[in-house]
Length: 303
Image (cartoon, rainbow, N blue to C red; front, side, top):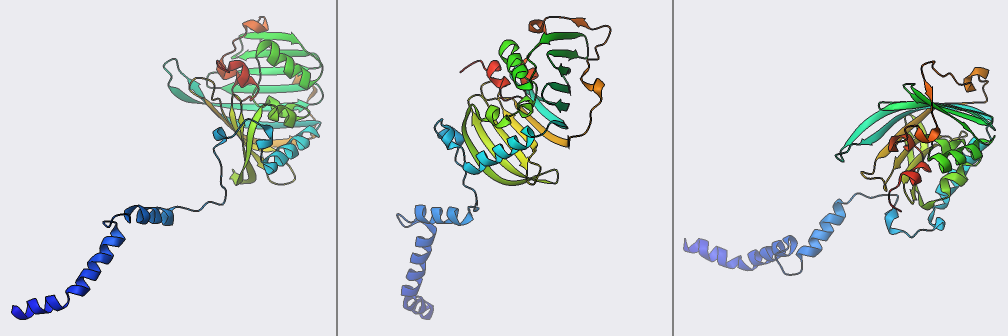
């Protein structure tokens, strides 16, 4: 027993040194815990190749658009603007805001046919209704589905001016209408406060470039195909000024260019039982303008 005590006494300096090292490493020594905690946090933090600032912290100037994001948006615009005739489809999910404030996710699909300068047919069908839209020369006919009410409107004979009139006079803007303008870049960027290149991404097997933009009333993201065809493959819109901040998410597919359309495609097919009404009386809820960046302005309750 005495021998054991003497043995421990001889090793006391070594034991004391070991205890000191343990105290320093595990933070019981004053001033060491924060350092070691931060070091551990730093070691465990995943690295990122893209540092993305919070768009809300930036000031409202178009020079805040990342040059690469700006260039890719222009390339997409130039590609679509150069095409005389094209069609595409979209699979859509969007939020329906209930009176209680709760959200329901709804589904929709859309078919778009464009023949510049003044012919468009759009068929939009969702869980909560839909519309058929015919534009031919100077006439627009909008049929509210399932087919009970329609309106006829006289408009200018170009897509750009016709869509401008529909928005300004009737607060009406169909999903993806910005993509049908002669210069989509001008329409998409006119209210942009900040823009970012997020990085490479894949949308249903298609390599894309992911861009994000901050607008006055809506935050929007777009995935542009990486290749010769600079077409949008995915769009996400968040309407931050509408109560509940509903989202609209769309996968754009089946892009076809410069193929002939049937002459009857742009001729209205109105059911016999449908009744005509003035455009101002056509149902026009928040859901009707979801899918449009410009349409969010009319639906905003606050500036």
